[in-house]
Image (cartoon, rainbow, N blue to C red):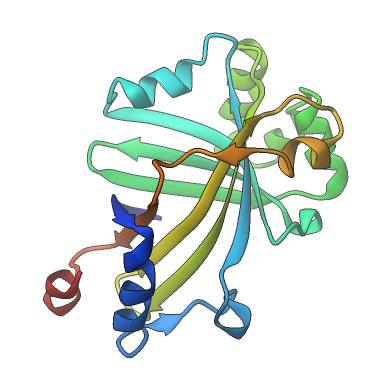
Length: 203
């Protein structure tokens, strides 16, 4: 899946306004039960030198990042994801992980990734470069979708982070502190092909 992704700071006061403007025009993501945000937890991996982090900070045009991600604390439905930046497009590949595979990867054993052809080189790379879980990012997402061009507009709220300091995963993932500038949240726009002018003008 290759698409364009754009992120913007929005004030916390504008979150309700944006949500109310989008509700008549887009579908609320099915994960937003009772019109409430759902929680995303991502565990990011990196080398001892934080190579992936510095690739992002330096604006490298082709780069990758690796993470385990799950929703609403349901670790049994976790995924291993590769997010690849190619010039101005973003490609995301993911595979399902069972509980044992998650624990193996967190312990530095990436062999389970070799079962998937597109992930085999990643297993070798992560092993060779001594990748480890480095950081946990959690936030609450209110997501709106359209059934064409893979269009998504999301409001990511209460973004918090911590280092992955514990072999006991819940201890690391449930800790964390807010990392956004005071009074701001993140609006993200994602799409394939064209983004509708009426939504662009509205936003």
